[in-house]
Image 1 (spheres, rainbow, N blue to C red):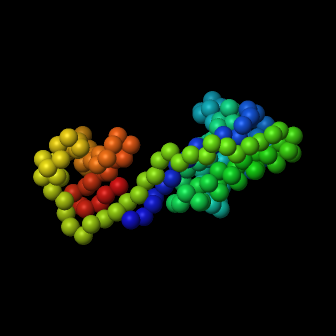
Image 2 (image 1 turned 180 degrees about the horizontal axis):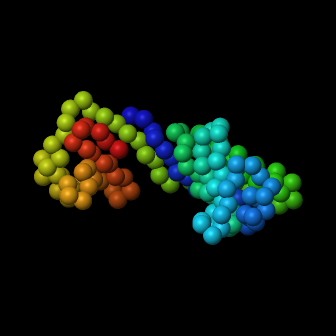
Image 3 (image 1 turned 120 degrees about the vertical axis):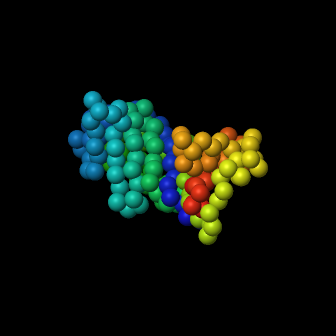
Length: 152
């Protein structure tokens, strides 16, 4: 099994002037007519963060929780430095929202038979989507199963 992506949220504790941040920072894309958030891309750790004017941020792209948290904290520190420490920037309420992992088995999977075995936990319509959606525990966990043996 390998983790493909982690999505997390955090709060900087104050409102942010995105235009000011974009004009004074590096690797920050802000086009308010196109999207309401500023997009901040980091090379190390390789993450992309959406920064909203409310001070909330969404960090994605990392392959581990540690990398994701490090990327989100680096963005908070970057904003603090852009404001030259004049604003009280916090790093609070860090929370992992989503994890995507992949796994492969060395055989093909009969999706129709799987669906018949677990009808209440599966959704499968090959016309709509080529994979089977399996919810083993609750509505929070979803496994996509493909005929090739690939699971996401």
